[in-house]
Length: 297
Length: 280
Image (cartoon, rainbow over all chains, first blue to last red; front, side, top):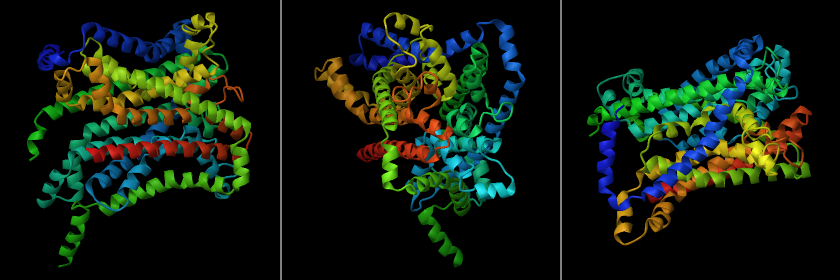
């Protein structure tokens, strides 16, 4: 750990601001209060999931997570992420490029519209696709003619997951691109590089940590979505159940240990997401410190 | 010659190529995935007629559901303002063992699937749970009551406040605090008169985000709420109930009301942020 270095930095920083020191007692109370609050609100739920999952022993735990229905719901969850993340990645990078590189009328409106799905309750998100593709929906006659089923079927789950995760990549990547400006891209243009070359050789290396971070967030949300998927899934066992829906079913049938066992898999996903996020932030900070600033005028 | 004209129109917009392709793709994708489906909701609601819409929207069961959703979201956001600012302060101003871990843990409610949070919180606060049992001995029922909904929304909303206040606190100019200290202000006065006012816009933003998220939240609440009509039935659950009875009109009306409230909340946040940006 680079504890020694950061401590020196902190102590010299502190020295400058001796007049601003909070008393030792106040500091201890505040840190203690924050730790206690977070311990109860955030840490306890994690602990209770694992403790409840293992309550009836490892045998029940492994039976639950290797059960055929669990495995089929895991496949659907992976499929939902595998469809929604790449789609939103392409959209997010394109949207960030358009908004950060050009000036055009309606840019503010476009930025606001991208955030729109954030303000829609997951349940409402499910509902609007039922209104479109459901038995009495706008496209019901067309779907019937083509013999296609979207609601209460896998395509519906893929569509609502993509809707729910729609703004995530665009938002993160846009923030990174706006912070970086486009001087280097314009320099490359004057040197004769084509649009694709500029994007692949100049922009992409600059935004890669932001993109990675966005993909991780998007993936976690896609795999964990519950409300919207619950509305369109129909809960058909072995067919349209995702992992979170499977947790709900097991819980509703009082198979608590099994429900928490499956939930513990999703907890591991969340913890892995947080660890990767921390690592990406650390990498990005290291690269910023590593002399990239020298390029800016 | 033609090229120069083109270059002229580019320079207003930006010189990089690819504008038409990327904007076209962005608009098409957003139109199909977001705008078309949302317009289906609006069209359906508009097709009902005002009196019918009003009748369904102000049904006693619906009113009880909004009241519950709004009041628990509000209470949770208020509590999160207090603890969120405390946590942000501790993370930014102090160094202590476990600070990095604490910082990473803040995002847990973003990363943890809501259904998992729901069953975990229910297990903790049910009358047999680690915290629910001592509370029930005191005569307080946590799970399956509005208190349970409030607890779930506190969990969900916390990162919104911390993550909006934290960067602002990091960016505060220490010389202003020094000036206050030199002029003889106590630490408490400096905090309440100098630091806190600088945080107000970010606190309001975080509050709005947490509130908007709270009124739409479903997964973490549905397990702990008890789901009794008129008592512990939140608005999103009422939509699901109506859908299960194939009452698409009813579901659409409740959804439109909720959508309007969360749009209004987020619009207010945008205005606050825009005003903040101008002042800088």
